[in-house]
Image (cartoon, rainbow, N blue to C red; front, side, top):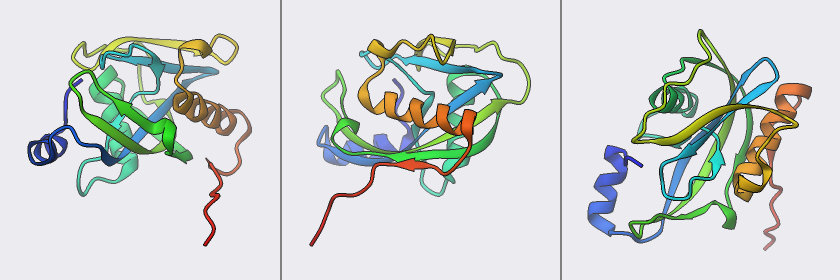
Length: 169
């Protein structure tokens, strides 16, 4: 998986130590099907197209950019589905890097075309799934939560989802 310029600069300073990074995921819907991808990061588990937000970039712009970079699809961002992080959002990469993501998940629809053009540097696979066809056993917990929130927003509307806080002074 390619590192952004910003992350590469930070990694040059701190090595593989754990980083907290803002990121995005995008649930692209074509009719009642959702696009899932397998990132080429060594895990090959299904999830949403997405990645890091660059400095100065609006999260919705990052969401559209990441979908385009990974799949070649131009999308229109429709809604914020939720914001996710926590212990399940810590990722250990094959190269030793550790990252904890705070992920804003958006829903979107293709502007034109629905056939993904996979960037093999970023993805191992991409496919459209109906809500009853999801590869649930191959979705990490954090991805499953994001997909569930996106499906709920897409099919039922309503407010964005988040995990309620439990911290008290």
